[in-house]
Length: 283
Image 1 (cartoon, rainbow, N blue to C red):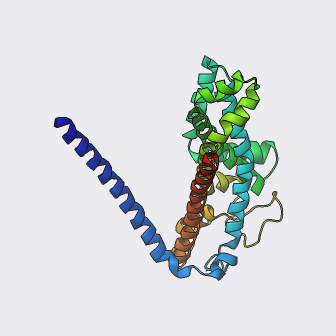
Image 2: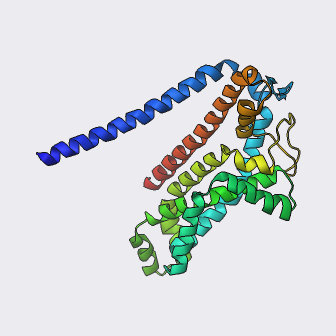
Image 3: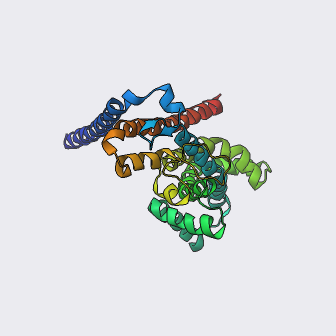
């Protein structure tokens, strides 16, 4: 009887916590939609800002955010997945390997502004990429890399060892065993963690603030070496640094709504990809 009461109270506590989180999230979304929905229009999404960002839209910021996220994906996704495959499938479980994993976990918790300063030193100054789309994308790629490695390695660990041993027993090589019996089952989890990491990178402000984001640049970047506007930095400027904050506040809420929609879209894409891949494997 006592055990049932403790179990009931535990489940009730979990439900209360869940409802509180959902209530805060819904309240937050309701406030953003109520204050930013009024400026949402086709013109707001397709026009450049005008008159010191007091009029116009956020189209250059949307394009800049998309370009930076794509560069982040090109760096973080393949490198992170291959690193996870090596650590989980090939590397011996030695003290060095444990130190490498510990370093990766610690890098996941490093503040993003530290990555921004590191990006300035490495990409802007040493590699001489300048303040550009490329520098910002590579910096965000380094920020996302520990997340990608950790998520991919955890997905690989969920595949039973019997899948590997069965392929090896039939004469398959190590790589053939991984490619045919491990990766098809681990890829859904690997992609989900990767997309969530990219969604986090798309909303970062500090790294791009030092490496390429412009305060007011109502034109699209013509190359990867140009500066750009981005939704997180655009929102930061209008909410805290603009000379007429009260006037542009509705535009700031509209920008926040666009950024939230972008991040939620990437999260939903991760869910859909995982669902379809798992369904395909079952068929």
